[in-house]
Image (cartoon, rainbow, N blue to C red):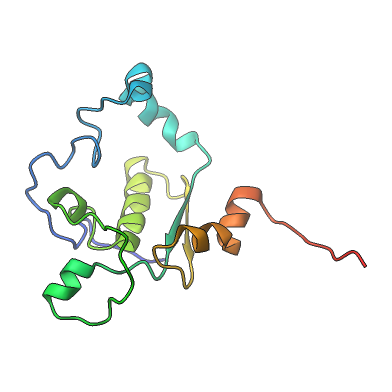
Length: 149
């Protein structure tokens, strides 16, 4: 199990508006959320069948790695949010996914609420993610194939 510190390593400490909608639940203006209410949604969320997928190679933060002159980030990071609010969640998408899943489990005091699956060898690539065996099994369950001759 990949564990992160209580506070993600990405920085962003002291961000004004860290819990504003987009990063948090303050000031939500989405009609669906307003109609249901944040409290109701928080109450129902742990009962939902949710699987979080995290690409094990989605570790690129091009602005940070360029600043530090690291050459390992050759993959386009796909517009990674490097704002204060984004970085308060973690320095890369893999950290953010793991930190969020761990936060949900800690918030609901239930280690089995929802699932987090690491998808090996996949970076920030929706096509590769959705076509991975891990994603297919999460969406459709175990699929057996048979060859008809």
